Each structure stands twice: as C-alpha cells, then as structure tokens.
Length: 332
Image (spheres, rainbow, N blue to C red):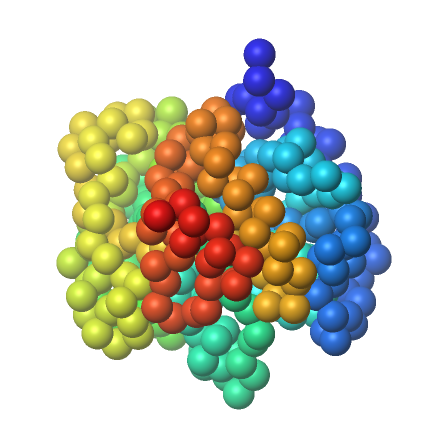
C-alpha cells in the first residue's frame, strides 16, 4: 500500500496540524532578506502554507509534504493551516513559509502590488500551475435564493480574511450588480460557512477550492445544498481584472443530490516560492511533485490536473528558474 492514501486525510491531519499551530504560535520572523529556513539548498524542513482543514489546500499540501520528504534527500516538509492565498503570499515574503498555495488572481495582485497588496508588490515566483480552483456560491433550499443577484441585503459568508475566496466573492457581487456594502458580510472559512448555513445564521456563502471540497460534500449529505450559477460573470471579471477568471462547469454529481452541471468560475491554483530559493531545490521540488501525480491523486482527485507540460505556462508571474528548467526538460 502506498504511504500516500486517503487514510492521511483522517490520521495525518492531526499530525500535520501540530507543526502548523506551533509555527503560528511562534509568530512570523523577519527573514525577508533570504529564502527562508531550509530553502538555501543546505537541507532542513520546508514549511508549506496551505489553507483551512475543510478545503483542498490542506490535505493536498500534506501529500506534497510526504512526496518532498520521500524524494528530496536532506529535506523534510510540514504543513501550515492558514487563511489561504493572500496570507500565504505574505508568509513567503517574510520567510515563515517556503512553499505556498495561492490562486491566480491573488498571485497577479501580489506581483502588481494592487488590491490587498496595494503599493507593496511581492517578490514571488511560480513552482507550477497545479489545478483549477472553482469559486462556488452555495446556499440551502430554505433560503429561496437561486441567483447571485438575490444576495443583496442578505447575510453572506465571503470567505476567511486574507483568502482568495474573499477576493473573488466581492468581485462576483460587483459583477452581479450587488453593492458589497449592501451585504451583511461574514468572514468564515468553508467549515464555518457550512456550520452557519446549517444553523441558519447566514443565507449563503462563497468558497474557492478544488472539486470536490470536503466540507461541501458534508453539507450536500443533508440533501438541501444549492449551488448558485455564477459562471456568467466570468467574462466581466476577466475584463476588469485579468485572464485568470474562466467560466467552467461543476459537473453533475460532483456533490450528492447535484443532478445537473452548474456554471462556476475557475481560476488556476499556483504553487509559489521566493525567487531567492536555491534553484536546484526549486527544480527538485517541481520534479518530486509532477513526477508523482498518481500518488498525489490518492490524496485528492484535483491532483490529476497537474501536467508538467503546461505547468509553466503562466503569464502574470515568473516561473521560478529551477522549476522552469524541469518543465523545459519535461516538455522536450
């Protein structure tokens, strides 16, 4: 039996949460002058910034940590639970993480120094485009909500502070003609959003993650989850912000009771690092992950989208030079 399997989702989460909490408790050291602990090519432990435990980043990050540990001599890896994309970029910048998941719109904003990074462009590079995030708008039958336009005046979870969900949710509301200030906003992670939908303290929520998302699988098991169609806003968002917003379907039967496909908005997920990271280590990380996709699929099916031949095709952030060397060799 492979050491990477679905049992990790249950047994490994508790193990990986401990170093995450320890790192959070220790604070964020100012190591902006270097590539961070363990990333200079001398070996050590690499910290992977992920997201909440109810999403995809956290379990898949655990799979990445195992692959790194088993395939790169002299290196171990641990997982940090975080608020995801925006926070993850900042953790790379200050050296508290060496590898991080982040969604394309947040990565672009970080490089350009706009949005959450206004006036403070971040030095990051891409270790590869790994899979698409789906921005999903969700409610339950009892609310009567069927469109994003009906969210005006409602209580809505827009995602955790510092997350790509929050960035995308506010942009969807604007594209749908809903003033974000007219919405009574709650900043909840996906697990908290599901709990709030169940107890009726919110009317709807947004979540940006791979398919299927564990917390939404749980909500769908109640039999009254409703996914709102939002794919029609992708073109407006792409025109306003960038090419990383695409209309994509959530296929029928992705979630229990979802008998028809639903239009959502997809955005690429990237794995990012500091450009100061040792180039050979960049190359080794890319090789370890993209050479072991079949193993990673056993952790989460979103990993099946990982393709070394296209992973370096990102226009809004530089590919880390070591990773580019690997992708060029893989494509030759």
